Image (cartoon, rainbow, N blue to C red; front, top):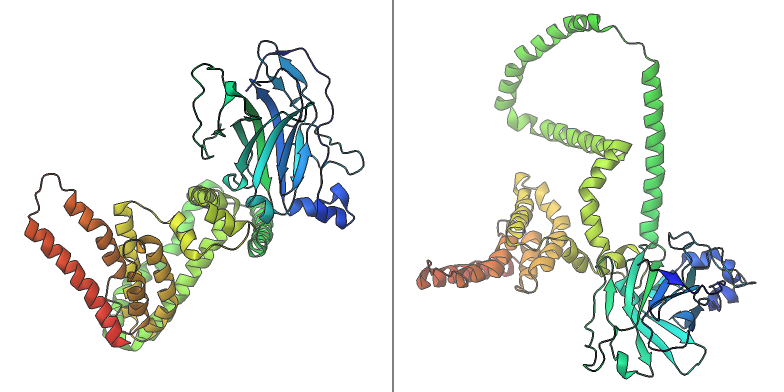
Length: 474
């Protein structure tokens, strides 16, 4: 984006004409940090290129939610092209402060802000306009703010549309992102008589706003917990450093008391195993309690280790791609940030769950395995199905509702009713979605038509049997 410029123009403060009705009504003016924390759009104008008018622009305005922010004039002009640079460089790295109500200036003159609730900003259109001394001519473009990722700087190159339209630069609003994450619209080709490049603006945008209350509470709780664990870890390390250690030549003597203990465990273990096999029905409750205690201890240890500095790095490396993919989607952003109504669990799961054929098969088998695992505990397991039935139904709706819209009812009933967990609802949904395509796309025609028909009938009977079984049980 760097250009060689000359003909330096006088620089001036760029943050003017900022209006926020809620903050002004509250008497806080533009120093109201609470208002800014509820939603803010930061814009840094770098330059405008290939303007179709000979007149020098006087400012760039950014408008959204009925609020207009006006920058100062350009600071330099390109020596060979009708292009102008606005940013002086002090605000490109993102260090900005809010403009003051009294002077309308900012300590970072390159950045201008639109302060409004995030719910309003996220669903609004952003209008960027290059204005001139003549109010009858200007260049503008529009961008849906929901295309931006919250709390992420995004440099964009936006094509500008002259108003009134100029035959030499008759273009539509094409959006090009340097990071490739903004959806581009199709731009019309220039007229054959004039192949001049369209006017463009380079601008950096950052949309910020608050978490949802429940997410903010979880983030605060996690930060407090991590701080406590870090203090415990530092205290433990400092205490261990004070413990005297034996010289390495004496370490072998530590094996002397360990030998009889290990020998006793080896000798007694077959006896304990034999008694357990004979009296398994009698000691089953004790075994279950022991397994539950051991599982709880392992989970507690895993949570504690994951909360340490090294554990957070490892866990973060595993789940970072999933979180990145979730926050890159609109349902994910709507789940985490206060952008409007909360998304449905199905829409969130659709962003996370895999779309590949074999990965979905593995997940479907895992879902059916969890659903049928209640048979391990004949009485208690049926009670666990009450909690698993809604979760399984949401997962099946997210994966297979488009191809098997009635499968969610079968899934919910077979998990909810007793002794019907053996029906593999998720795997049936996978077969209904992928098996017909596998048979139809067989280019070598290895599968005979009668086998295709038999497989299709078998799938239909399985789905009908599952539906009939659930209906009978109900």
